[in-house]
Image 1 (cartoon, rainbow, N blue to C red):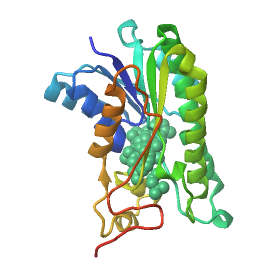
Image 2 (image 1 turned 180 degrees about the vertical axis):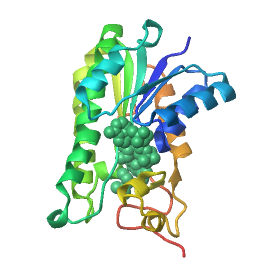
Image 3 (image 1 turned 120 degrees about the horizontal axis):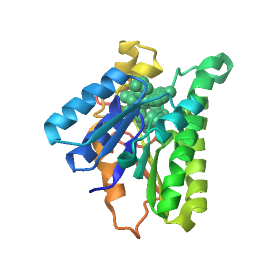
Length: 253
Ligand code: NDP
Ligand code: 8X3
């Protein structure tokens, strides 16, 4: 049997495409997120399309107890997780620091940083016991650079970078790989969430560009985890051709 993969944030965007990529390639996939209905729909479609083995697990990564209860509840045949894709995350708002909403800040930090840590902590004993495993953390170009209005989101992704680097150093002795993937702008539900349902503002983010799409990131994540045992991609930055960095975007309108 192929290695078991756990993907957080599989109800949408990158996580959904990543789950599909592994399922299509015969990997058993644990799909997680808060929206159970979407998880069940994805399970049905992946089973029907690829005869895949899918285990849905609903939890909010911010809820420490729920994370541990969910992962510890996995049936014996699903416990042996080899690949963890820490993808769940979000941005909320683009306000300057002086106008930022404290609740938005807390949600971003609780999800992108603390949630990622809880899931990692819950899965790590399995990998350590196996002396094998691969953790892929979803960073961002926001892990590398900041931009006006990006303040706390960028801080949370800078934290993903520091945690990925630190974890790689701590876990190397167990034969565990840690990779960070850092995409630039990609059209998913990300901007709709960031602009709290304002579709016009969300669409404007991608005006005049052919952005990355979830499929692009799924291909990269799969590639990174398919390399030989002795090869570890530590950090990978990817953007669409028209985005040189946070400030230089060649919009063709
Ligand atoms: P989407 O909004 O399409 O997907 C986000 C996923 O995260 C959903 O499946 C959502 O599931 C899950 N999620 C959010 N909050 C929680 C929570 N509290 N508990 C559990 N799951 C949660 O966005 P993307 O696919 O674009 O984003 C995925 C990751 O990629 C994020 O970490 C984001 O920061 C990062 N990223 C995105 C980029 C982009 O431009 N799109 C670029 C660079 C990085 P549910 O709501 O069901 O819980
Ligand atoms: C998402 C990319 O540019 O909105 O992480 O920060 S950006």
